[in-house]
Image (tube, rainbow, N blue to C red; front, side, top):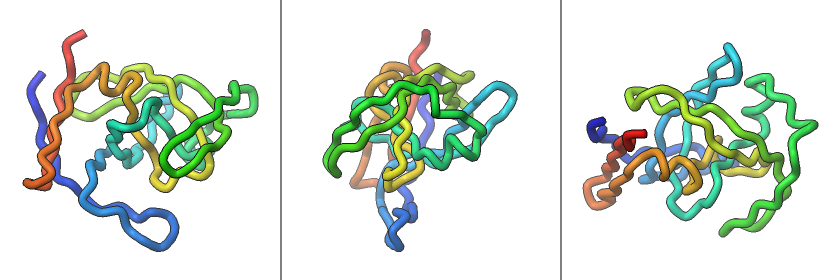
Length: 139
C-alpha cells in the first residue's frame, strides 16, 4: 500500500485544555455490525492500544467479564479491562484485530500503541513539517 500524509492537529484533553501538534488520526472501531469513529493518538511510546471506557459504553461493549490488566505509563498507572478490538484505518485496508486496554482516565479518546498498530503499519513522523505518514504493511 502507499503512504498517506496527515497533518498534526489539536485535540481537547478532557480537562479544559488542548493537546496540539500531535499525530491524531480518525479510526473506526468495529463491534459486530456496529461501527464507531474515534480520534486516536499514534503513540510510539505506548506498548498496548488504550481506549477510554466511555467509548466502550457508546459502542455497546460490555466490559464486565473482561480480564483486568494493570497499565502503567508516563502519567501513572491504572487498572483497565483487556479485550481485543477490530480497528480500521480508512484507506488502509480492512479492519485488523488488536489487543486493547479500556481505562476511564485516558486524556484522549484512544492511544494506538506498539503492539499490533506498529506491527501492521509503518509510521514516519516529520514534526518540523507538522506532518506524519502511515503505510499498511502487506500481510
